[in-house]
Image (cartoon, rainbow, N blue to C red; front, side, top):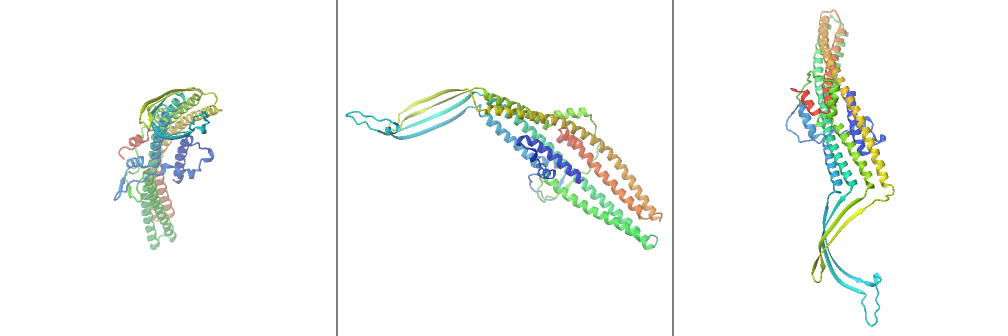
Length: 477
């Protein structure tokens, strides 16, 4: 189970890091080790909610609903949408009119000689100091871009980036369902192991009591009682470990879904088994390509990169803008005002930008190629995800059936071994071996049932329908 948990953490965080790498310029040297990645995954954290009095009953669907509201990965992704909205407004502002109002009052006294004006008029003393005098000016200003193809394409690119952020948030919700389902099903499996361990302790206790009685009666050697006692202590140790694992798993589940620290809760769902209506690979892939939010986000990122390249190319194009202002101006001495205005049209023709535009074009083309390569990779990954999920579902379903039959066989073997020991036909070696076979059969059944149910959630995730898929695949549980 530890290996499966580590594998999940690694796969989940690698996906998240891979999705984030284009946005943050991540390089191979920045990618953490699997253990570091697992600890950094936001989908294993949350913002805790309010504590509820008493013991909280928690079903799988309740856990998912809480996770979608409180999980850190979903919350951070929702804020990315807000950030993308802000970026789009920044780009759009270059195309919208801007207005402002300015007003000032000025009092001045000027030395003409400072500006090179000197007057030598015979018989007349021309003053070199003018003033003091005052004036004021108050105007409303408006400016508007008439043609700026670079700004238009940047706005289109920001719009597609916003769509990508929205799709990424939907995909983040699928990842939350996957993380919550993984931890909840592990909790169910750990709880089932406690019940199995308790039953095995009782069985081992009964065998030990029987062996001890026969030793005291002189019908069995002391080694039989010692062997049975060792088996009993082993089962008791496994029970202690199972209880500890369950308590820790509940803590992990509480962190994922955002329960308040110290909140007590019970898992109300047990290990469900319901046959799965199969689908072909072609049907599954068709659904996946239409529904996977990460795929739709990748498509939007490609479109955003295409617009960004067009915007870089448009830096070669001329721009046309207009500005105007109107207001009142006059002297502070007379308080007489006059209407004043200014209207201006500006045509800017780029001639040489020192290679800046060429550099922007090269960067935009590189980012476009990268986004297309990521899209192609994701399309292949979706194919692999769908096939893997279907393979695992089929295999785990067959394992559940075999494990269920094996439990009956192991229980029957143990019953016969105990009868044979009671009759003095065999010793406790056979009984202990039978007990170990029963324990192994129950563990295999618990593991196969967990794998089967988690394979359902994995398939729902692979199809891009995790939220609805859990409701459909676990009806009545």
